[in-house]
Image 1 (cartoon, each protein chain N blue to C red):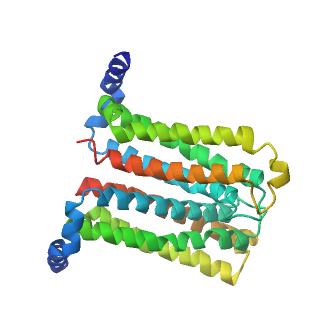
Image 2 (image 1 turned 30 degrees about the vertical axis):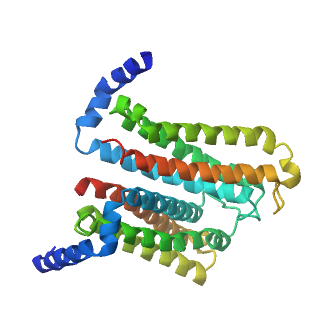
Image 3 (image 1 turned 45 degrees about the horizontal axis):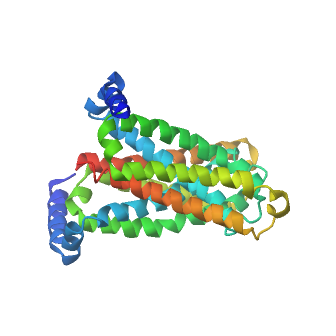
Length: 164
Length: 169
């Protein structure tokens, strides 16, 4: 039950209580969270569609990743910070919410998928990265990423409907 | 809003509310979150594509590529997913007419949407007339910068207003 007491401490911190009790702080932070996740998913889909061989075919894959992923990471940092603030306002209840738990699992899977692609998929990127046809490993990583991020949005949206 | 506007809005909301479709959405509780998820995925495509165009107008993204090539790549992804946004938005309105149509956040969002359509149309028009206008001279550069900033602010505000609908209901 150490996690439980840590969560209890979290939601009784001054910051968490301020956000929870203020009329407009929660919706404002939530708005920034939605904007950030929208940009995470929208920008990462540009890379995913390239990996699938669907769009931006005139740009080399690693070049496109260098162009686009800094925006994805920037937005992800904002989403993570705002998400943590929202979580802190009701930490115990969120942690027991099935869709919240599922969303965290999906985020871990998206991270693993990306790490695996960087470890295995990009090994011979020099030979296929400029071509329109991408290898199966790239298509799998891109398709899985798209699927996982769309599910992150779905699970995230569902949390608000299942908290009461 | 004027009293007569509010009166007609009340009549419209009451009428939508009693339709079979609205009733069906109201009693099926997975419809609204599912349709909202599709709505958010579509706005992710629209807002991110608009951002790529805006960043190119400013000159911080794909500056090595011609403006019209970047616009040709991303502007269709601002326009076409809007069909999905209108369709899913319409379903949400039918499911909760008063909660949306009479909501100040929703009304603000629709006003901002008109602004977004105008600024997106303006980019399309300017690029068609002068394919590289954002890279031609100080005045056009400044104009492109201003358009990009307005576009980013408007799209971000649309997303904010959308989230605030829940808090004015």
